[in-house]
Length: 135
Image (cartoon, rainbow, N blue to C red; front, side, top):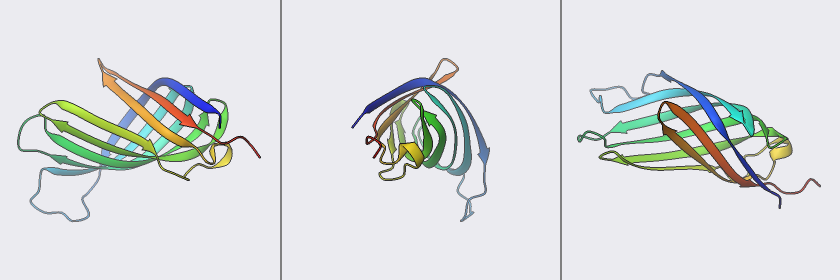
Protein backbone atom coordinates (compact mmCIF):
# COMPACT_ATOMS: atom_id res chain seq x y z
CA UNK A 1 0.00 0.00 0.00
CA UNK A 2 1.39 3.41 -0.91
CA UNK A 3 2.16 5.65 2.06
CA UNK A 4 0.85 9.20 1.77
CA UNK A 5 2.01 12.16 3.81
CA UNK A 6 0.76 15.68 3.48
CA UNK A 7 1.26 18.84 5.48
CA UNK A 8 0.04 22.40 5.34
CA UNK A 9 -2.23 24.89 7.00
CA UNK A 10 -5.95 25.27 7.42
CA UNK A 11 -8.49 27.98 8.13
CA UNK A 12 -11.38 27.14 10.44
CA UNK A 13 -14.64 28.77 11.44
CA UNK A 14 -16.93 27.59 14.22
CA UNK A 15 -20.65 28.36 14.28
CA UNK A 16 -22.49 27.74 17.57
CA UNK A 17 -25.51 25.44 17.27
CA UNK A 18 -28.37 24.75 19.66
CA UNK A 19 -27.99 21.71 21.88
CA UNK A 20 -30.44 18.90 21.12
CA UNK A 21 -31.26 18.68 24.82
CA UNK A 22 -31.14 22.25 26.11
CA UNK A 23 -31.08 22.95 29.80
CA UNK A 24 -29.22 24.87 32.44
CA UNK A 25 -25.87 23.40 31.36
CA UNK A 26 -23.47 26.15 30.27
CA UNK A 27 -20.57 23.66 30.41
CA UNK A 28 -21.71 21.95 27.18
CA UNK A 29 -21.65 23.25 23.62
CA UNK A 30 -22.33 22.20 20.04
CA UNK A 31 -20.74 23.75 16.94
CA UNK A 32 -20.60 23.47 13.18
CA UNK A 33 -17.05 23.15 11.80
CA UNK A 34 -16.07 24.62 8.47
CA UNK A 35 -12.46 24.28 7.27
CA UNK A 36 -10.33 25.03 4.23
CA UNK A 37 -7.10 23.00 3.94
CA UNK A 38 -4.06 24.25 2.00
CA UNK A 39 -0.88 22.42 1.00
CA UNK A 40 -0.66 18.67 0.37
CA UNK A 41 -4.35 18.46 1.25
CA UNK A 42 -6.36 20.80 -0.98
CA UNK A 43 -9.80 20.31 0.48
CA UNK A 44 -12.74 21.52 2.50
CA UNK A 45 -13.94 20.04 5.76
CA UNK A 46 -17.40 20.18 7.31
CA UNK A 47 -18.42 18.62 10.58
CA UNK A 48 -20.07 18.87 13.94
CA UNK A 49 -18.41 19.20 17.33
CA UNK A 50 -19.61 18.66 20.89
CA UNK A 51 -17.74 20.34 23.74
CA UNK A 52 -17.64 20.06 27.51
CA UNK A 53 -15.89 22.38 29.96
CA UNK A 54 -14.45 21.28 33.29
CA UNK A 55 -14.83 23.23 36.53
CA UNK A 56 -11.08 24.06 36.54
CA UNK A 57 -9.68 26.58 34.05
CA UNK A 58 -7.97 24.84 31.13
CA UNK A 59 -9.87 21.56 31.53
CA UNK A 60 -12.23 20.63 28.71
CA UNK A 61 -13.01 18.03 26.07
CA UNK A 62 -14.41 17.83 22.56
CA UNK A 63 -15.44 15.19 20.06
CA UNK A 64 -16.20 15.77 16.39
CA UNK A 65 -16.90 14.02 13.12
CA UNK A 66 -15.73 15.80 9.97
CA UNK A 67 -15.98 14.99 6.24
CA UNK A 68 -12.95 16.15 4.26
CA UNK A 69 -13.45 16.44 0.48
CA UNK A 70 -10.84 17.37 -2.12
CA UNK A 71 -7.40 16.21 -3.19
CA UNK A 72 -4.81 14.52 -0.96
CA UNK A 73 -1.34 14.06 -2.48
CA UNK A 74 -2.87 14.16 -5.97
CA UNK A 75 -5.73 11.72 -5.22
CA UNK A 76 -9.32 13.00 -5.36
CA UNK A 77 -12.08 11.90 -3.02
CA UNK A 78 -13.34 12.30 0.50
CA UNK A 79 -13.00 10.66 3.91
CA UNK A 80 -14.23 11.08 7.46
CA UNK A 81 -12.11 11.87 10.49
CA UNK A 82 -13.02 11.52 14.15
CA UNK A 83 -11.61 14.00 16.68
CA UNK A 84 -11.08 13.34 20.39
CA UNK A 85 -9.55 16.17 22.36
CA UNK A 86 -9.03 16.39 26.11
CA UNK A 87 -7.31 19.22 27.98
CA UNK A 88 -6.31 18.77 31.61
CA UNK A 89 -5.43 22.12 33.16
CA UNK A 90 -3.98 23.30 29.87
CA UNK A 91 -2.20 20.08 28.86
CA UNK A 92 -3.65 18.85 25.56
CA UNK A 93 -4.21 15.28 24.35
CA UNK A 94 -5.63 15.40 20.81
CA UNK A 95 -6.20 12.45 18.48
CA UNK A 96 -7.64 12.70 14.98
CA UNK A 97 -8.08 9.41 13.11
CA UNK A 98 -9.38 8.58 9.67
CA UNK A 99 -12.62 6.60 10.01
CA UNK A 100 -12.07 3.07 8.60
CA UNK A 101 -13.70 2.41 5.19
CA UNK A 102 -14.94 6.01 4.88
CA UNK A 103 -12.84 6.93 1.82
CA UNK A 104 -14.41 7.60 -1.57
CA UNK A 105 -13.04 7.99 -5.11
CA UNK A 106 -9.27 7.67 -5.32
CA UNK A 107 -9.15 7.69 -1.49
CA UNK A 108 -11.17 4.47 -1.11
CA UNK A 109 -9.51 2.32 1.53
CA UNK A 110 -7.59 5.20 3.13
CA UNK A 111 -6.37 4.56 6.69
CA UNK A 112 -4.26 6.65 9.04
CA UNK A 113 -4.10 9.65 11.30
CA UNK A 114 -4.10 13.42 11.14
CA UNK A 115 -2.11 15.64 13.50
CA UNK A 116 -3.39 19.15 14.19
CA UNK A 117 -0.95 21.80 15.43
CA UNK A 118 -2.54 24.96 16.77
CA UNK A 119 -0.51 27.83 18.14
CA UNK A 120 0.99 31.25 17.51
CA UNK A 121 -2.11 32.25 15.55
CA UNK A 122 -1.71 29.34 13.07
CA UNK A 123 -3.54 26.11 12.33
CA UNK A 124 -1.38 23.43 10.71
CA UNK A 125 -1.92 19.74 9.93
CA UNK A 126 0.00 16.64 8.98
CA UNK A 127 -1.57 13.47 7.52
CA UNK A 128 0.11 10.07 7.63
CA UNK A 129 -1.99 7.55 5.72
CA UNK A 130 -2.00 4.55 3.43
CA UNK A 131 -4.21 4.01 0.38
CA UNK A 132 -4.48 0.73 -1.53
CA UNK A 133 -3.07 0.62 -5.05
CA UNK A 134 -5.68 1.23 -7.76
CA UNK A 135 -7.21 -1.99 -9.05
